[in-house]
Image (cartoon, rainbow over all chains, first blue to last red; front, side, top):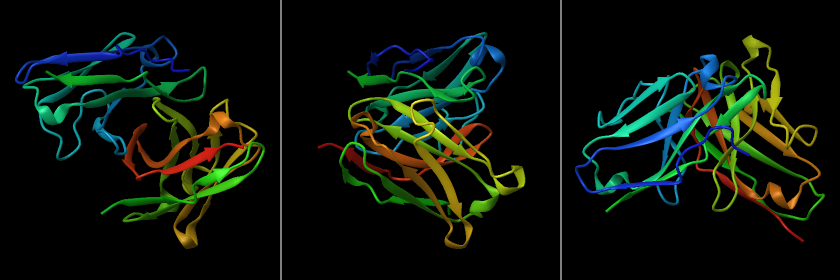
Length: 111
Length: 119
């Protein structure tokens, strides 16, 4: 059972901006632990997209950005492209569970 | 270049055991924090357990659903991390990924190995 809640799906037309929320609690995001985001293309392993709330690994386009506030975090995709159609997951650490936790996952559809 | 390659998945009966492996290259395994993460068919990602670096004690932590049944270990000479799974249940059916940990994130991922628990 995931302790980080994401919307099941979001969609947008090519070129549009979409955002994905990740809602946690005072034992994870609200406790100050970093939030990380992953992209999982169909049939492939997840790939790190954003680390440390808002940092992009080398090679990740700057169309992807992350932010965090209070007990929530968000991933924004600007200039949506067909290749962005994938599942996206947030992740953090939970002190009450003493372990890492993932979000419920969001499917992004490009219309 | 960092590479992680999992192997050892397969079909096992409920109550059985299986060991999956993760061969690491491009970095020193003993200096790294490592994770196992799983994904049941059609479902989301679930953290399984963590192995700290030798310098940080080499200790392990596990998610509640697998604690007491799964064990993570490392063979530095073989640059391999293992996940020993005992008393397997049907709900353990999943693709198992090994990942490196950096700043709390799962930085590099392997391609995964499928474990199916079924009679």
